[in-house]
Image (cartoon, rainbow, N blue to C red; front, top):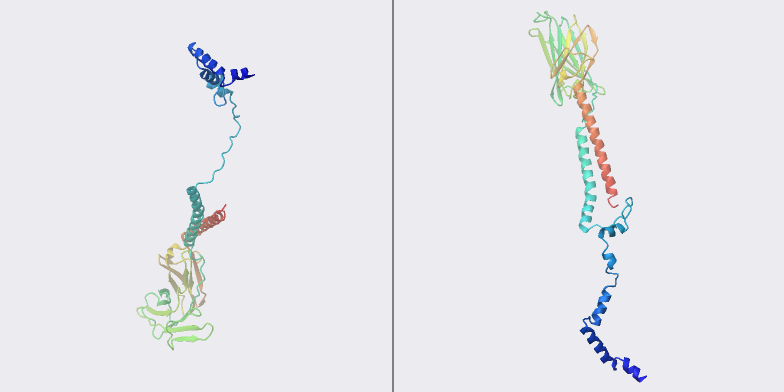
Length: 340
């Protein structure tokens, strides 16, 4: 037992024999035992390096042999990543900026619709009419009646009474007078007695009587009344003029020419009561008088071009109003969902 332990122990007699064997191997041209062992280990395939057979396989064959995804298979979606801080700020500003822009656009369109919408309706009210009374003992050929708006609150009635052609004065002893009564509630600028009389009532009535003095076959009389748009109404689309009532007391059958100042008078169609003469600022109507009372009349005019312009403005205003409402509604919807 002592001999065996001494022969195979690391410190026993076996150690010199091992050195002798290594020296003999080196002399024979062989590699040291450690290096040969490393060479043998290098040929063993590991998990990190391919084996000899696998390394010699062509890359194309390895690609073909590797499993591939079917063509109709949808690739997996990448995982959502939270937005970067700068991108998140831009997204937040956009969420706030969009409803503000839509709201501002809606307000602008709303203002434009208000500006485009016609400021007044196309209809006009029937103006009240005056009452005239002519009393004469000699024939009269023509009675002229013209209304001039001298200021926004004051109108002038101008009367001209003409004798028949060739007559420069009425026969000796002839008399003629003119009596004027404006519409109820309308008063004269001045009402001196005894020419002007105030008749009590609600509203009161004013009557002015003037004697006519003929010169060169004509007599004139002017009356001022406190009224705006006296005897006429117009708005660019429709117009109306009140032809006064006339009570004629005298011989013959005179005619009356009633004239009103109306802007763009020639642009209106006066089919209801055709004008005797018309220009760009004045319209004149002729009324044939007979003995007794001639009823008042209303002349109505329609401006077709003004009506078309009014309709166009109304349509555009309506369209702008609709767009304004849509923009404001969209702004409200975007603002409500801004935090989603």
